[in-house]
Length: 495
Image (cartoon, rainbow, N blue to C red; front, side, top):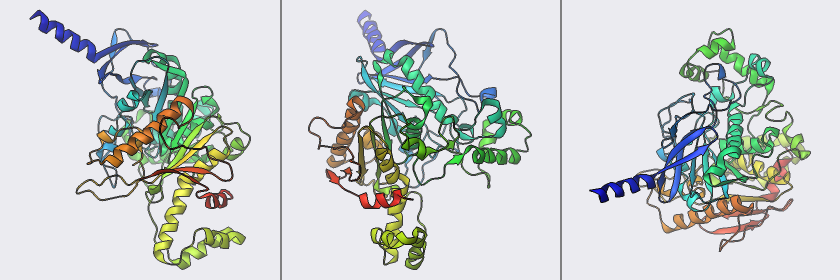
């Protein structure tokens, strides 16, 4: 009996971990030699009078806080699988809450390990750190302290309004400010988990890549990170960025829809009411604001002057990034007519993006969408970066799932390969998938360690050269392609 009790105590000890951090003691769990802490508060709940305010410090606690489960996801429309994104890519449907500013840590507990911070996508209107494909255990086994963070999205994360601006000097971009608050928490606490606060890599995909480039841009993030990975997207994307006045006008529309007279009135409404109001016609999606505080008013000029946080960058896209935003059926004649917007360069455009039949028009439109959304941002980030940049194209089509449509190398399909989480994605994986997963995740971990993805027996990945370019093709074969898409990118850069 004594032996049984001793074994039980030994098992319980092995499965739980207790640490002291700045706000108090936390208890996590352990799995396969990795310490796991979930649901650690990095800021005060942004509720009540803290709604639409910059994140405030988390309160201290007494006793030991149980950190073995994910926190609630931020308020958003109820998450559900759709199109190519099966449940592994989607936030848990519940709970959803304004009280969402928590992070999660996976660590082997070795000392002075590089820190890898994951920022989820979702169009800045949805998402959560609790998605299955964001599990950090395998990356921790590869030698990083893996951190995933939550941030406010949608109307609660990105709404601006003149009254809010008067209240704080600026408004909007609260979700980005949440991310910076998490990075500050990491600076204060990550050493307790074995992480090196002087070797932090920020990484994200889609809206997470927009977030990464926002952090690269922001003066508020100076000194909080040291390397950056942006997958499929960035602030230089051909997507709309608002100035503060435009963003405030959107907030005024929401207040009118709510029949509210003040921000105080809006703060009295439930988060669910606000989310539902934000979905009404005429409001539009809430997103990035060039406010002159979190982000500069003149983005391109800011980078041209070299005022961004300068850091090694690894960035790229997926071949399916050109189709996930939808396709519009256009005739050859309409396509050629639209090319005239380039004036004297119209003939050059049509030689770079030729189309003589409807199928080719569709292909060129997808290519232009891909380059505008992700290719050009990656190219420009490298062009303005005085340190080394490494560019890639993910071209591998994941192994089919029986009974599920084949969407090719779709937007986000690279993430489980990069984070070594194919085991969380329910498909009958083949050796080629597992080999590519190990290759890409090794590149990502090497980059987090040293700012250079190369190492071991991996194919050599050369930095992106200004005016010529080296792009690593991550497909069925992994190989470097020099000069790839350079003429097309050089043309689009002018516009």
